[in-house]
Image (cartoon, rainbow, N blue to C red; front, top):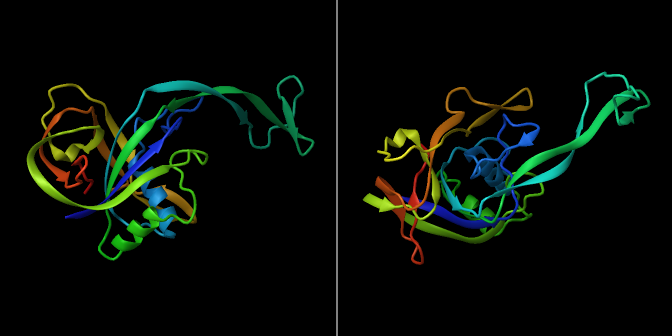
Length: 233
């Protein structure tokens, strides 16, 4: 099986968990939907193109950062003792500070298996992007180091060299307790709005730390440092 291998890097990045508000918590690696969105943007796709993904990486921990937070109630009238700002001369806006969690020095490897008709376009769009690509927040620029076409082979067992998302349907045997994330994946456009599909819209995945032995796993043939590959269906 052929795949596109992307080695990339980000520093001080946030992949926000949708349930976090006052403290913008981050996933340790970007969710599948975030990477798919970046690929769709790079290729200029206007509708969802299914493709299989594997996401892994290592980082140097997280820090907490301050940011300015604005909030308002639709139609809420301005009150001098409650609001810090006023809009249109009548509506009140709250201004304050909040915290965001940032990952430091995130080195990542993505494996992408698009459809046969999309393969070359995805490869060329990532190797020679027309615009700077971001992953996470709009300002979180993605530094792409290498884009290669690799061949995947099935191994009875292999050792992970990075932290990695492994879909739970792999049915792997774990000798430790690891986090399980319910990650967004596939969307559809409903009345001009992006909505996660009820069937197939999310992927439950283990977040497995590096240096673990994994059974029945794909490995790429990258000459410098082969990597395990845990593809979504």
